[in-house]
View: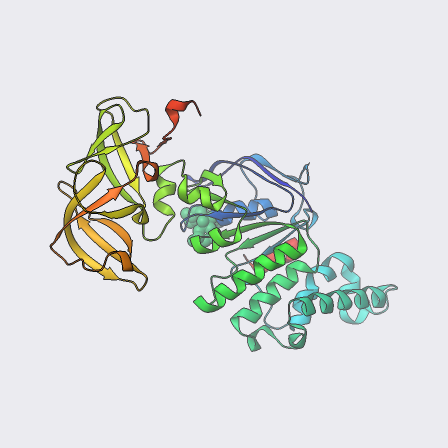
Length: 391
Ligand SMILES: Nc1ncnc2c1ncn2[C@@H]1O[C@H](COP(=O)(O)OP(=O)(O)OP(=O)(O)O)[C@@H](O)[C@H]1O
Ligand SMILES: [Mg+2]
């Protein structure tokens, strides 16, 4: 078991700056997810932690020890790749045994004929087999040990890839989108299995995904990454309800957060889309702000007036338990989306005028540069080669 420290890591590929000074402290036994859109640098960071890629600046420590000069196999990490990176010509047992064979057997012991003559080989091989069987049982794949990867389902392959990481008992598991090749139902099932695995092993997990549902359900903390920078590292509920940055608020949440431009009228009041709303932030008069309102933070109001938005209904979508209402507001291009409980909003038709109430404590306020203004400010508050490297 070990903590993991990433300090000021930078990485450029030619003129492209892929990581722009990433720092992150992950506690021993924590499940941390790196969440961000495609191309933001998640895999690059993971590969640098694993030692498969060298950073241009900054440092990585595992268990309090700088590992920058160490080969991947000496870092006490194991990586599960998106592609699983299983050798197609080897059985499941051989694939899982590979990291142990690479570590425990010398080059000559690994050669099939000659190796038999070297003392100690039989004992080590038996130990490796026993460990592979034990891990395979714990993952429910013991009956598949004699098969080749091509004879397995996607979920079974994924378990083999996890098993191959587990046999070494690494201090840190690095998982790069391990579920992305699976269909939706299997993803949900495997998500639960990974969470259970983390609980059982108690190891440190760094998990990469661009799927927010995975990040939110699995993690102790989520690190939101964009364009090679970490924008926020917080528990999932804070990432959603208390974002530090407008880009975090926009990235997290489905349907997306509504963003409206407004201007502070006087302390505590803001004019937005033809309405006036109370705000708790300590913003100066005439300051231009952006309001973020989650779709479920809007509720039906009987009348217009303070703390309500009034507009005309463009579209109503029935989603079963919920109703998505798209409301066009005066002077705003994009309709706002309200998520209403279906039983509380029985008859809403396109074209009608509707009032939606906004509670001041559910408003998120952002400066125009994207920085969050806290409401209580005033109160002073890989690849197969890589597998071999790691093995
Ligand atoms: N070896 C490389 N040479 C040049 N550019 C690279 C290399 N590896 C990655 N990049 C670039 O670095 C950026 C970040 O890539 P990375 O694979 O880390 O993204 P990611 O966040 O993992 O994306 P995805 O979710 O699509 O896997 C991308 O623009 C990518 O094209
Ligand atoms: Mg990637």
